[in-house]
Image (spheres, rainbow, N blue to C red):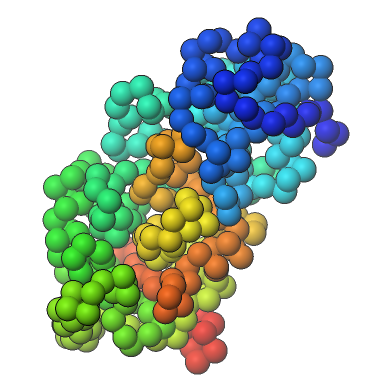
Length: 368
């Protein structure tokens, strides 16, 4: 695609005169209302200057997001697509602040499924759109519902609920705060959910769903930030979770889940992978966090992230159908300081279709 754009530095408040003439004042006010700097904001301008778009994106991902396109919208979006193809990205999203369904469809964008927790207040767009580049969206034609966690610590429970709703084991309408907190209560290591405890809670909640835990350490995890006395009693609970897993027949594989193994689970076996990642790359703070891996596109795994950073201008449009390059996901899923990888793999309900669970063989590659 021939370049038809110019990239202009984004300086909130110091808008160039041509942008002040082109963009509505309420759009410029919204652009500058939050600190978007963590997500590399930039203006992409059509070659003749008639249209422009504000783009942002999480670091370490394979998408860009159009916050708004102003002026000649078709020209602005064409410029964005040209830019995105040159960057080798998998996806462009478009927040529905000012985008019309007609303009989005004309540019090849499909509407995103609205989140189960509907946007409230002025900080959330009521719609959003996505365009996969190069036909790469074939592997995510039927995405799971998006549900945002209602606390800072219930990400594990939410990813499990979303996975089971996607698999048909849980009604979508049942995903609410009560379900979220109830599953968290059953899985928590206070306040986090460690992999074995989460796997046990999933098996108890959905007995017909095959579950496997992949955790390449036999030591208690996610405790290094705590004092010795705080670590001690949580370690007791983690050992109890391992005993529960053994009693319930849940395999706990101590070989590291590889990225090919993860892709095999979601692409070929149609399983869901709850993966523990650090938010250091995407958000700038090293906090362990659960995401749901449910699809694959060339070079990237597609996840649902149940949390987004409103302070940096993120919305549900960023966190839903989020493509993360294989290398980035490989890096961010090694949890410091122990450098372990933790995952819970959930198969399709046995009443629907028997499933062979992904485990790791002695080389760390997928087996069976």
